[in-house]
Length: 126
Image 1 (cartoon, rainbow, N blue to C red):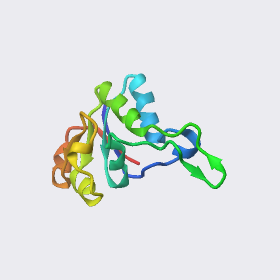
Image 2 (cartoon, one colour; image 1 turned 90 degrees about the vertical axis):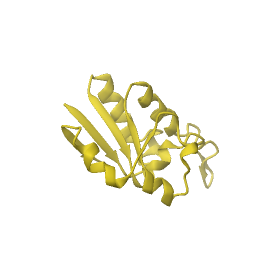
Image 3 (cartoon, one colour; image 1 turned 30 degrees about the vertical axis):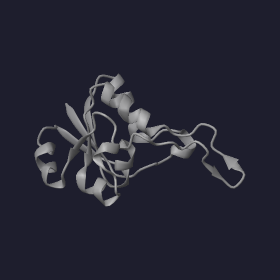
Image 4 (cartoon, helix red, strand yellow; image 1 turned 60 degrees about the horizontal axis):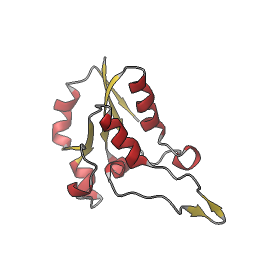
């Protein structure tokens, strides 16, 4: 069964866990032999930006000593032959140029989504 995961909510639990829960789940599922790909939409398109750095993150006196490394986690998925797509329109709405994206991230328009969905047995939206 080939699964397409749509991730819209960004930075969910990244302070507490240092990983996005769905990106982490994707790694775990791949490790168990699942065939899956990922679409980044909404604020989650930020995950595809190569030059991210959450080091120095703090709230009041509290400092994040192990910041999330989402771009590294996405790049690792791509290295595991997971196709990672990012919504063109959501990138554009956030002022993210295609040249800022990680190598291997594929841009897809909202109009192309239906054809993309046809390639999968199941679609999970997070």
